[in-house]
Length: 220
Image (cartoon, rainbow, N blue to C red):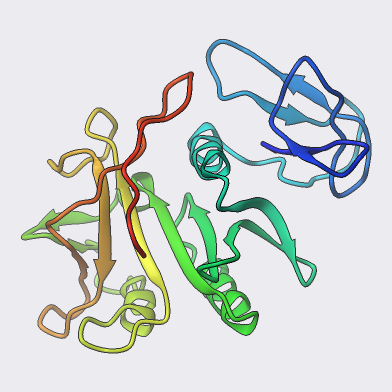
């Protein structure tokens, strides 16, 4: 996890200066402060709690960025449901998705909407590594693949969209589809059945460096 809980209830990133406890099981955590991976908290060996055990450096980078704005509540619970992040003023709920898992994604969108939150999903580009890219469209080579239905259901261009869906492209990482680094909005267009439409105009992505990230704000 990126944020531990202190004894007085604050949420803090990994540090040498304070002790951190798991928000779920309340056990004391170990701060992982290496030179290669994003600093984070980890349960000690033998602790059975699985709370946020599978987070990646990519997810930690985004969580650090949003936590640093002071506008988002990251790794937070809303009515007992764990979200990667929530923007209380804008009523946004964030999911940082490593895979195009339709069951998990639809459950997140429905759960957020039930709590009056607009779902925002940022996909890691690897979620689309099996897709073919042409003419700013992503299409799976298997005709039986139905992943486009998510975008048909929630991001049909010209209709009221029930989710804001983005892909995070980093030019130096595979796959980048020949695109520049940035956040590209994803939608469905009735003109291209079975394909996911990639908006050609990208938004600036944070620069995930060891210090504080540099960024331009973007709207959802």
